[in-house]
Image 1: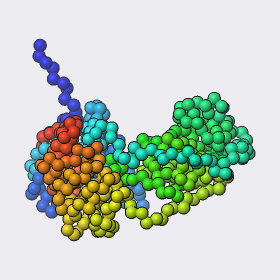
Image 2: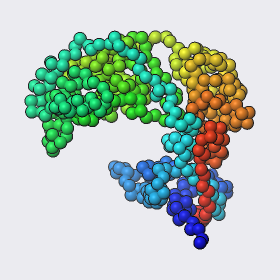
Image 3: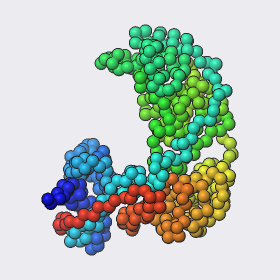
Image 4: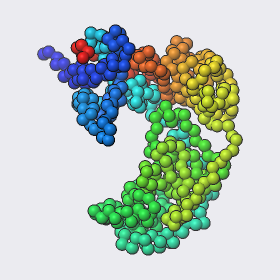
Length: 472
């Protein structure tokens, strides 16, 4: 019996990609000084929820906002690919293509890999996860013990409950069973002030029906968009996702006089509401050295580490007695050092025993030696802009690195010398400048060599060929 070949996926059909490639070619040719004289290279990324394509957007007539119809050709072309992605069960695909003057195109699709984080606005592979489920150090950091921290003197559950009942006389409060259920689900005992709040109102939309004014009244009384009692959650580090390329450049810092620990997340941060701008409000049960158990903090959606003190207690918060933490302005050397033409001017100046992250950016002078940071006990991240290292092989002496971000040329040096640090948990290849000068395929080849050192899944490339016809 003849073996049946599996049906060809539409995502692997060149015709699926033709409309996108035609648009990209036209846009690129329109910018080129000698359109049609040389092959055109285009890149992009398309996912089920969005896309990144170098296509110009038309400027709407004066007095009119941009409309979907203005980019209908782009939307139609992208939706054709998105339909194919959905059929194939793929979240997103990055691609590159080379198109010759006659319209013959070689298209390379980069399939997703469990060892590669999805990129952000780039067609090159993002961070390579060399150790499965590895997390950057700040995301592994637990709070320091706060056994001596007690509630603030202003914490007064009875006064808090009385005030809220005056403000919300008709509210439906949570039962003791509902509060106990929340504690069991969270695995933590709720502080008395938070219990007092929910005994007055359980903050469920079903209790308000279509009465928006009642909901607003509850939010005004609680001074936040209060979460229902059964939607309380713990703001652990996992709730604050950040890509490796950014997370590895962060550091956890808690000064001796800090009220809030500078953590990514904590098992003692109980989120009970939002401020209306995307920031979470939480009761803090793991305060800093100068803080109080039960203080109110804000976890900003614009930051990845730390939280801001709002009030010493929930009572203070409800009664609008806010507290502002005094920021420490000491002269301690930074745990994250940025060496570039606008900041620290040398690696030697950045070096100190507590240094965790060294980021070398744009630099017009002589390249740097890494000798000043060799042997530093806490250095875990090195990110170096292309051409800034005098000798990339010095990286082999940094035995504590867990994340390394380099340009392709520096990675090539390490790979050829078999000098890639085996302490790494993740890595990144950053191609700078015009992507046309370094095809995506070259970056993927280096990425796969790095992944192979850890026996990690490779990035699969699919090559499709077809003809787009003459350039209109």
